[in-house]
Image (tube, rainbow, N blue to C red; front, top):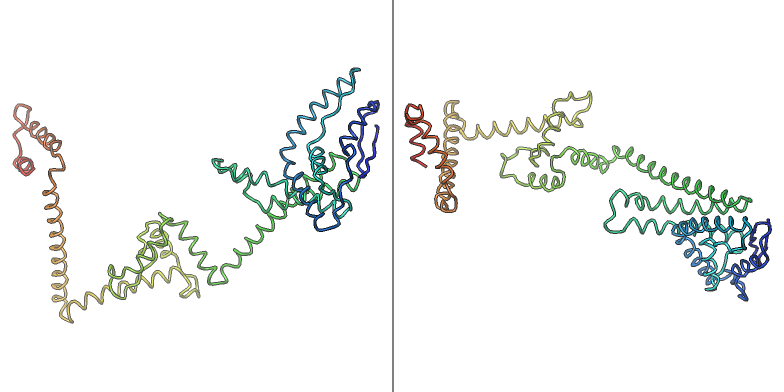
Length: 387
């Protein structure tokens, strides 16, 4: 193996027998013929320049993998040609090497000290997740793919940082390219896993603390109601409307959440809660006791309203008052039905009753003696005449 040491400390390796002109061209491409060494990042401006270099190389890392894969195949072919006695052919350089040349040409400084190299590797790892996060926000992307690419930005950023740092530490300890790559993968997975575990632990701790605060208990109840509701989207608005609509219940009559929202899913939930036995010492904290107390108060308000209608009279008198109220309500309902029919008759021209009459006439024909019938019943003839 032939090694060439560059001014910046980089070592290039070439297979034994590589022609000198090939080595010279590769070295010149690496350092730039006649170019001055990049400035060291001693100043703030220099550090900003080094950050720009890291961003350039880091953002292009993922797209550069496709370039490097193609280059590996080309280099394998050229190596085979040389092995068969063919001419020496320059190898395809890695995408990161080309980008480093671009940064050198722009005068962006390279990291010099070990601390700067570690910071640079971490920054490049963070910049490397930018294309993935950006791809996850593309319009029209399937939700599952968008979640995969950009569903956990914090974990991705931490994983990129830890992966870059792990690769740099592996290089400092003499690991080769594959060792550095493996260390980056393991470091990235480890950093992301630690972040996910910390987030899960935070959610678990918050959930465990919820029952011990008023806000937490309210949040738990809200989540249960949302899961049980037949229409969770408009549940909060329906509850508020039902609670405020006092004209639809007797004065002093309490209302449950299911009754206020008129939600069948919550009605089933409350029914199950009522049937449960109250735990010893639960008192008013038990849902079963609370719902039974509400039912008792509603029944008491009904009894009070009925007794108030009779003005303290006899049971027969109170019954007469109730029957009278029912008759009045029935008459009011009949009046509303009459109004509805009047409006239907006024707008009768908008609807065709021909299909109804055809069905009726068909029914009448089935009763004719010629068809084996005994004649049209008077009730049916009355219905058709009314139509």
